[in-house]
Every structure is written in structure tokens, then in C-alpha cells.
Image 1 (cartoon, rainbow, N blue to C red):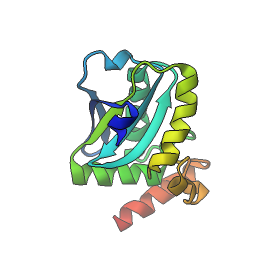
Image 2: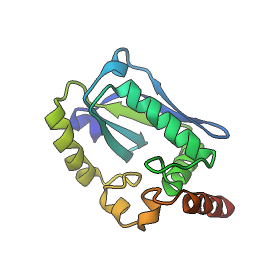
Image 3: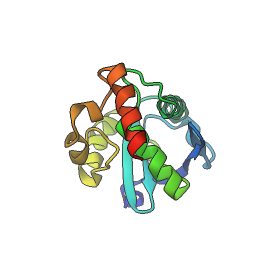
Image 4: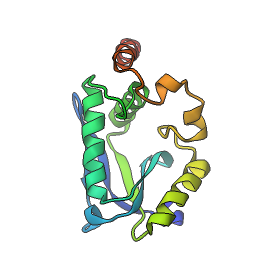
Length: 160
């Protein structure tokens, strides 16, 4: 369980239809934490683990922007990929929100090494570096080609 690994509930991630991904802080002061490892969880399933070497609030603003753009079909190299975006929308629609947790007071060195260990241990499906993430085709882990990403997004949405 994430709490056993030092994580604290700091907020929630939500979806405001049709295409706005929101991360809301509910723990006072957590916005200024950094460096930090963060995680998103639906019930007991950890779906994403990441890190920021800077301030947590700034990283979450970037997440909001990247995922919201992708939900609107606006893909960019380095941004959220179609497969992950589709999964975020599906899971947030089904569950209403994701728990948003983070570890406070970590050093930069700890953040860099601990993130990998946690990803190995939890195998979160929305992490491209997890075992299940690496099992997806390369085009389902990133946006190497924006036109192909947009075409894949359209295919995913026709099925869903």
C-alpha cells in the first residue's frame, strides 16, 4: 500500500467533461513540496507513479495541461499519448476521481532512485516505464508522430 511507502493523500484528480483533466490539492502546503514522488490511485489500484524534481504544484499544472490537450485531441511530442489519455478518461468517468498521493521531504537523489523502485513494485498501468507499460507497442507509450497519434485517438474513440 502506498501509505506504507510514505505516501500521504494530498488531493484528487478529476475529469470535467468533455476534456478538462483537473488535479486538486486538499492538503495544506502540499503544493509547494519538492522534490517529490507522486502517485494516482483508483481504489487499491495504483495507476501512475511519477516524480518532480521541482515544485509539485507546477508539475501538476503541466499534467493538467498535457492531459486536457490530449483529451481534446491535441497531441504533442512529449505530451500525453492517446492510449494513456483514453484510459484516464475511461477510469475517471467510471470512478469519478483518482486519489492523488505524494511523499514529502525527499532529497533529489532519493526521488531519482525511489521512483524506479516503486514503479517496479506497483507496476502501474499508466506508467510507460512499468513492465505492463513496456509491453505496449512503442506508439502506445509516446507521441513520436503527432499525425499518427491523432489518428490513433480517433480509432480509440470509435471503439469506445
